[in-house]
Length: 310
Ligand code: GLU
Image 1 (cartoon, rainbow, N blue to C red):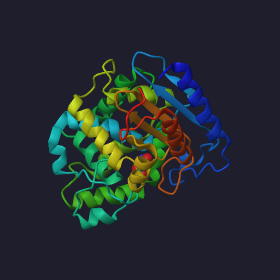
Image 2 (cartoon, rainbow, N blue to C red):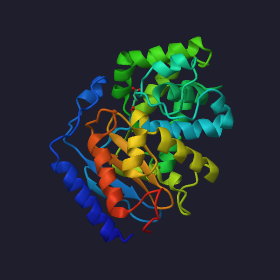
Image 3 (cartoon, helix red, strand yellow):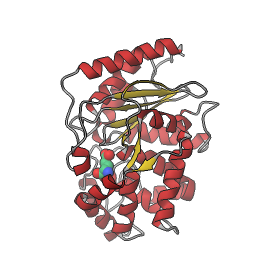
Image 4 (spheres, helix red, strand yellow):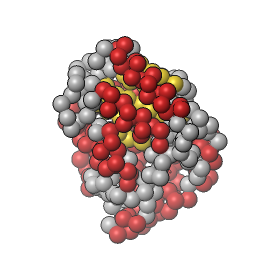
């Protein structure tokens, strides 16, 4: 698609989002996120070898939260490969991101690596034989390299804010430990997990960081192409918690959301798209972000379920 046409689509999508009076509700269970102004919106589209196109507050950094789980999964698979699947499943959960319910029923083996319990196990796998600082550094290094941007950093205040209030995540970690599915003390694994969630990025940086998942010829080669297919499959089926089916229906592309209001979406072979609007819908996914992605894909025709328009 021509850049001029794509830019006018982004402007249209941003204008519609900015005009919508219903912004959703910002996540308030993490004190630092409760303070974020809901009246912000950004979208960015990265395509290899072309300037990243943006609309709205695309240079404003936000807390990527669970979008980080995509990068940590890539690092964990790089480290222990398919052994990860002995500890975590690959099925949608149909439950909230922090649900305890299935974990109890399924005896401490989380349904997938994108719900909190599964992400905690995935981070625990990255920690294997490494100091927490080095494990975190490997995740941050991966993100920076994928985005081609060494300025990407962790917001320490957001991490501390979650360490102080993340009681549900502690409960999940202790439950995993009781089933022998955590190899490190909960404070240690969660310390790493909370810091990975506290990575801050702008929409432009996040869209660039997702380029490796497009499998485009000129995209950064961070993982093998078979792994790209698998990560995208998990994003499609599990990337939006109990709203994953809804996102697949509305957007038709693999995506991963975070409670900071960011969503990373991949149009395979075409583009990496980041959207950010802090207010969430009842699935705890960005309300305006989801609607914007639906509008964008309706206007571009980008979908893994139909004939692409380019
Ligand atoms: N750090 C958040 C938590 O563990 C991530 C949740 C999300 O972004 O969906 O609660």
